[in-house]
Length: 333
Image (cartoon, rainbow, N blue to C red; front, side, top):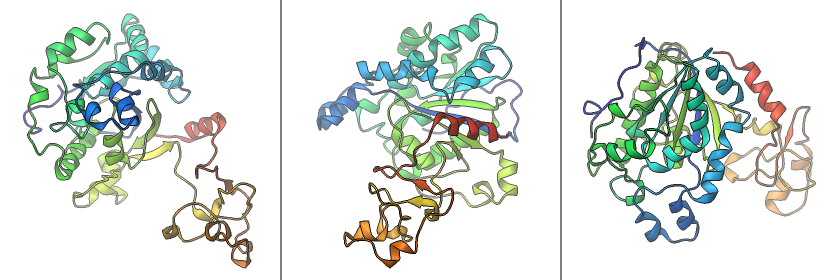
């Protein structure tokens, strides 16, 4: 597999320099192989050829269009005020998630004379491609028959018939995955649309963003232009990264990154002290809760300042829809 062999057809008015973008990443809904993996049936899970969504996965997909994070973007695109690019892995579970979650929206945009461009991007298919049938795709003609009518704007003409056979044995090696994601980031930057929706896979998103996605989860990142990134001393101004996770210049908007440890209150129930200051110890407990020896002077010296956030027992900051709307209001591209 090489980028010279396959690339999506360029969009009209593509800008080589690119511009800042907001990028929504959506992990596919639960697949039939996910169900088997959860039951520790790894051999059976990996033996399914390009599995589709489970019943639960279809329900997860159906809720995507109602995600408040996407509400304004879908409304603006539907009114032909802000073009959106949709990019998806060609694997069945990603396409079914797109169809179940945003298929009706794509149809409405198409009927209103504001069709959305939907690109198939094989290089963001799951890492196991080449080793496991569950991560192996199907020919373009099969995808056309299954999704050609269901997904208006799907650009199947840019996908070679044998795309799923074109990669070699090294496709999932770390160096190859890194190169794939570097190319993907550069390609997204070059597109004309300022808003991009990406439907893909857990391992790919972790390699790209160092973030773990639940099935059907939507997250928002910003991507500066290559020029902005270089001027700020970002990754584009440095030598290419050799390992994973890639952590390119995608910056999380929602959910936001954790505040500094000096603003995080211990995750233990009823504890009111800040987490210990040494991240190498792991966890998000105060000294006393971490060591199990009761609170002492080290805890008492770390009383929370104004604005500190109490962590849940899972080590997460509770977030509300109002918090999300404030983050979106502050977003300026």
